[in-house]
Image 1 (spheres, rainbow over the protein chains, first blue to last red):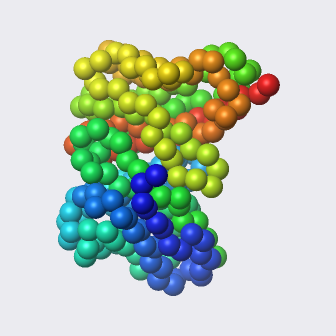
Image 2: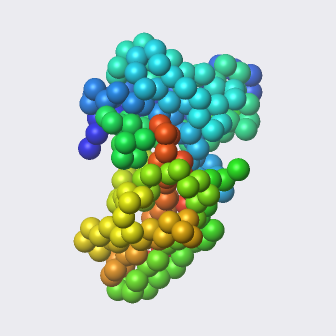
Length: 115
Length: 110
């Protein structure tokens, strides 16, 4: 299995509070992604990174920011959490990128509940 | 605008029979198509892929078919086993993103 660790795995927070989810990889892969999974929507791309300090927006980036200061870490931040951001968040990594083969390795997910 | 669509949210199949999962896409620029499998409380795992220059790819019990003119792909599982019960996502790759469908929940019963 690819070495991907997401933390925290579960979090309950209140509307308006900041939240940071962390994705840590030990594979030295260049590309990292954050997805959210919601019923009826499948997996939707939030942000992705194609190298240290290089990031770009996905399909549903509003309300989220990311940072990647090291190859191994990709942080997803909700500056002011809203109930619509209640979801399961998945981090994924790839050595050649989704545009090459599309094969991503996923973490186990972080379940976030915003009350 | 859903670029990748799975119109069947669920499918129930008897063990030993064929499971056929379908997926439609709208963007003709996609060049790789993939299927991922997801068990509860786990991350999705890659199952099988196909390049846009092919129309079939087979891996054991799993075969993916691509019909570019119809912008349609399908996953065949033969024979279906209870351990195949999971949510299956199709995905399409273009530029630098992977776009997923909404998923189909497959249940294989004895």
